[in-house]
Image 1 (tube, one colour):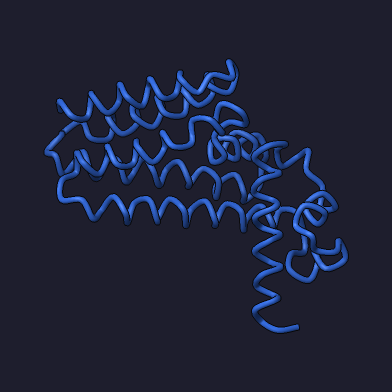
Image 2 (cartoon, helix red, strand yellow; image 1 turned 90 degrees about the vertical axis):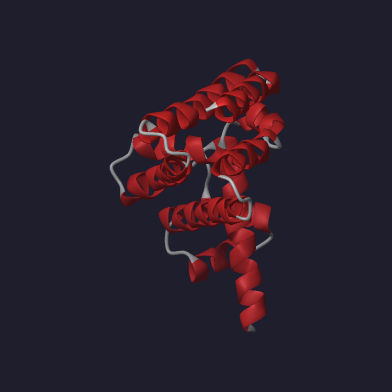
Length: 187
């Protein structure tokens, strides 16, 4: 099998798992469903991943890479205030899907937070990565309460994503993101 086809199948499996884990949860998703959704024969799944947990680790790594991309895009902006607003704007683009299925990263943290596995720590690092990045921005703004502000911001985003999902109303999250932007702009 060529390296390109191998990478393509692996990517398709990870993409399918990411979507299924987001919509159904890790516990409710089977390897057969991942194979079917990806178009990869179920027997071939084991060539790329020995367990469903291995696929979950790849999904978490994909989310982490996505966060890195958002941070790099924001880092192009000259001021930390603008960077935070840019990150909030990138989140606002996902309010509709979050109201339908929840925050993909928050959902992984919640689900793996209930399990005693290495995936728990890996998933939690996703939110910690966001908190740390936001904290650095507030520190650059000279805020002594940078950690507390970062926790408040990320908590508000995650809380509004849960309420948006529970009430199937993307405007809840959009409203909270707008409030956070106003807060950041006056700090």
